[in-house]
Length: 155
Image 1 (cartoon, rainbow, N blue to C red):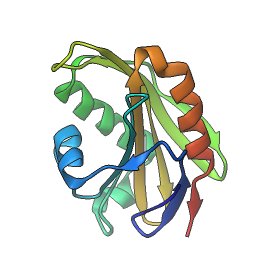
Image 2 (cartoon, rainbow, N blue to C red; image 1 turned 30 degrees about the vertical axis):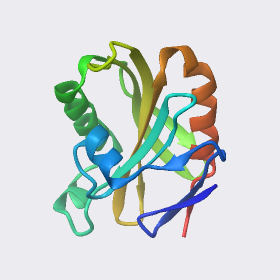
Image 3 (cartoon, rainbow, N blue to C red; image 1 turned 45 degrees about the horizontal axis):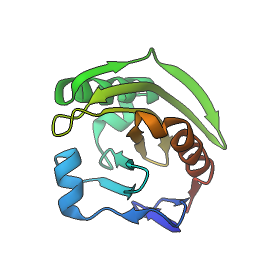
Image 4 (cartoon, helix red, strand yellow; image 1 turned 180 degrees about the horizontal axis):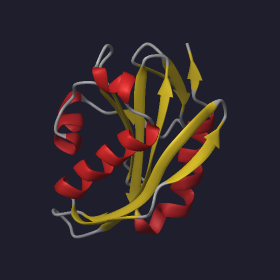
């Protein structure tokens, strides 16, 4: 399926994903503001993207690593048993991305989830892409996220 994000980007996902509702976004991320997400319930996988506001001073004074560090700090504050790798830089298509791998334990069922966070700058916004899945599905879901990220195109 093709999805548009913030009127600036498009991504392609497998047909097994569905767009998250505002209620789901609020439940998993605390807010629907500047947030997009899809999920595959069979694989227990969520892919989300949040972005900075246009005109925000942060957009002019920051880089991908500082935004990724902010994402990491919020996750550490809000997730149980959160652990993250060091930061890395990757070239994905036309985008330079900075990010980190992470794990956490879900409060409701005790399951361990693994994922990756990547931050890019496109036009006047920073976009933070996050995916996570159950640890058992991590290898398969990592490939799905990689394919989705490589499908990323500007409008």
